[in-house]
Image (tube, helix red, strand yellow):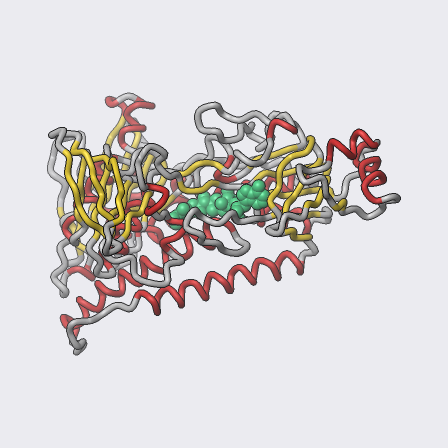
Length: 523
Ligand SMILES: Cc1cc2nc3c(=O)[nH]c(=O)nc-3n(C[C@H](O)[C@H](O)[C@H](O)COP(=O)(O)OP(=O)(O)OC[C@H]3O[C@@H](n4cnc5c(N)ncnc54)[C@H](O)[C@@H]3O)c2cc1C
């Protein structure tokens, strides 16, 4: 027992054992754990989208549950509360700032509809940031209350594995706590990646972990990357009136339909976002006036260029939060390439009673709703309430760029690769949203594409929608596609007039037939 207690002791040699029945502090606790009596039925590491959903569901179904969550401040010192990436530095602040940017466009439209809007209309970043941050803080508080209401014990500690049933958690102040559980769920998500080889990148750059928490406007910004995070951030910065440049080494939105991705960036460029394509930064230096001088290489010409920015935002991908978990102490296997945790269809890791869900799990979409659903289903299985496993096919998503891009199912490239070009039929149309007409907005990139199997009844493999409210439109069609809708069924679906969504039910022109897509719209 003494040897076990020594083994359980953290690096500083101090720990506190949380248990319901421990005779003799450390020694008693260690004996309890060794004898298979655990503090909790379920311990969840990570209080983000997946972890909170799993913990709350399990507690509701009668399990004794604990959640540990700890936010390591960003290299710039930004920190936040309970709720994970989505709530604090992802979906929620992103969508609210996207909304702020869209409002700017509506204010520009307003005079066409008779509104007398004094020009120029100015935007106050400080005011917006404070409102968004206050809302996020209210969500942090809401999550804590929900855990309390459901009798889920919450620990604000950074966890790492001691053995396959025990974790050691460390508080901000360095105090250690040992917790043990029958089942452990890892839901630690990921964090933005910084380039390691670029001088000044870490010192002077920020990431999506910081942008939503800036009190002052970032000013003229260079966004490096071609991910959806890069394009969304560049989109709202441009929409708020800031001079914004995106620097990308290769293609935008890798993994998404490439025709749609080109239209997304084309629209952004038409709205004023500058693009430096096939360029890669090599150095960031701080000038005496505080501005950042960025040196980059143009990969096409081989030439070196320079530019000055107030802010450099890295959006070059994310790394899973597995590095400090000491997974080897529990025998949990990770992918050597991605460092993500390897899981099976039940979300189980290489250790049968330890699971991984959400962004930290290999091969899973990095999206909040999939993390939440996977967490809930896992809790139900652990409680013996259900055998249902998560179905990761046909997960819809939307990129909240100035012209939103929603999709569900396969891209055209994936459909061709999986089914063979001769078996795929693509229907598409450019359309003009009614709301673009009076205000004379350019609708050149408003486009819909449906990728189907060629053989009747032409099962829909993928739907791609570029236009206003893409998330709302795509969510509705996702149900049909999940239920195995065919092209014929979509065509028999009566539209809601006048909407952009009704244009989906009008897609009649076959792309493979070589005809130009019709331009449709409200007439
Ligand atoms: C800018 C941005 C925009 C996004 N927009 C969208 C969107 O519009 N729609 C969408 O569906 N998804 C979006 N996402 C993705 C979404 O936020 C994630 O997929 C989701 O949050 C993943 O949930 P999770 O539970 O896996 O992890 P997270 O939500 O990241 O939660 C993990 C938690 O674990 C904590 N943690 C990590 N290590 C430890 C440890 N050792 N001990 C204790 N706690 C630890 C972390 O601090 C964090 O609180 C966006 C992401 C970003 C970055």
